[in-house]
Figure 1 (tube, rainbow, N blue to C red):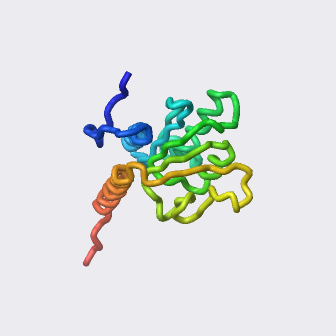
Figure 2: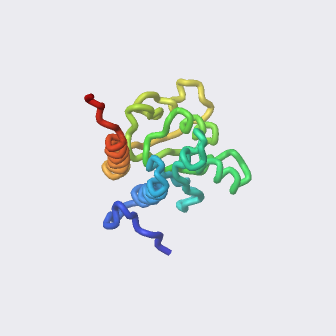
Figure 3: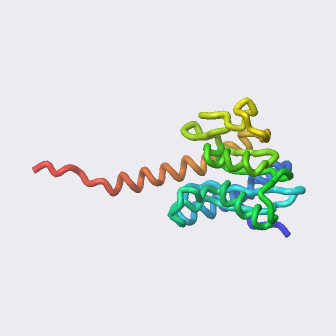
Length: 177
């Protein structure tokens, strides 16, 4: 059964499984956006099927740990009954941060596909290279970035542009008496 269309990209037609799963992560990001959360979405895939899906819930839960990746990993571990997610691939709309990258390594996810690069806190390639084995990890995570990068970046840019516009409207002009 086909899932609902992306609200932001209703006409996008995936040309391969990588784009198909990233589009599902984008749909999760749209759910975060509807909640006023930073639009980051994630799906965990096993054997070519989505096993768990999630989106950012930091504001909603009031919890700094409620990143889309951590929630997806937690749900998968509970559903599987094991902490080892060795046969799983992750699709996430934004390059994972240090915390999420650590959780990905610890859960032994096979490969991470991410959309937009995160120049301020991305821990895969932008600011760090956490997945590199030279750091002494016992598990090597493969990764591929830039999947539907324009679409994923646009969601983030539009979200932060709207916040800046909203916040600018709240600022009072100085009183010149």
